Length: 632
Image (cartoon, rainbow, N blue to C red; front, side):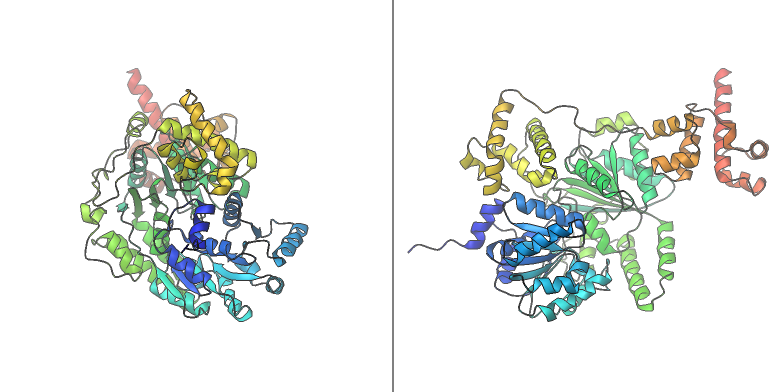
């Protein structure tokens, strides 16, 4: 008797190029395809999107509506699906009226397997009326924790999604999130009116991640940041900054030590954010410094470190940020460097919240975060406990509380030469226990050659490089080195459509590589000098305010950098920067009080004299002293 091929396994191999499901995926896919509601909590990088994309593909002639909060995320997912040969489309403000009419016409005919819309658009009366004409399979709601007021990222527009059940009572609803406590999960089910849903909650324990929490004083945060970055030899790094201004300061700090980094925050225009994200994804620039605006939908497997500066709003937020590390299952470090003043700032903002219930929820998140950073218990267990998971008694053996702090938290700042040397070797300072064995080493030259080809293809097609082929697929190609199309089809991540589109080109790449062809050595970005850029602008006659605006920095940061240049003799002191009488008052005070501390001098001069002026005059006095000592 001949067995009928399983449609889900067949589609998984045909479109995604995967031979098997990842944990929990199959149960979710089959439940949703059978018409059952589902509520899924799966860690970042666990494969949530496939759980709704695959049943949508199998439901021929019908369309799944995916509700997603970010335009960029919609566009990336649709681009990926189309590259795989799956008909998908998005509707948002970037789509013209004429194109929208065409999309709606095709959707009514069942031509798309997936349609992506924002939560705001999903609940518009015009949208729900149009969807009544579409042969629907189900609704999938991404980032579903946003529907709960107890969630760390509550968005009022998500609350309105409850009307979908009333309007489309026959279609199943699937809710997906990476971080939801037991209370938030209950709220998701209640708000969306899910009927006897399959509840799939994966473990919150990420065995390959090492959590390191350190309270900082003085310049310790910058020193630890530099050391953490220097320890990553390959792969990517994300630095999360508490403010946009701090993003620029961190990039300058790294640049002055010859480390290239790129920015990402909400005040950048969409095109620049997109370009910077792509440079980071392709590892043209390996370090990205951003605010919480960066991260949703990012699927980069080889992030070796996530560094959070300052306290996040909640433990859920920290877990989401940290979860972007080590998606390839290999060891990765997740750092939280905080200062005592972070607590005061958080408390100040919470006290400004007018609504008593919202304020109570904010204090609850604050206290949960305090427990995490001050406790001496295993960090993995603390996270599991927070999310309502019955944590095992086994300690992770790798976090700072289990294994002890790394050997370098009080290290001095390494200089540029030392950093360059250290980047040649990766050392965490601690030994991981029970971590996955790294896969066989790959030929780095071959990987760079394949990446260069991928970048060229992406530019030609005007799509993101990871949409062409994912990093994990490139690395599998390096390991397997296929010689023909049959061998190429066995590489995970290369489905039929991609094999058809790129197969011959990929096989030719291996032939060219064997003949000695290599990637261009100049493709990685070089760090720009923050010091040099500021110096040049000042020498051109720009004011501190203009330099700050041009470079996207705080004025105080520009002045601090200027003072450093003056003291080192790399920039002359401009008399126009400080009024003459202010300079004289400062110099007189310095004769009595010295130049070690600014506060005593500030108290000794008239109140109109600013700290910025004192900083600049201090630098000039120190420079004059150095010159005199060297002359003697």
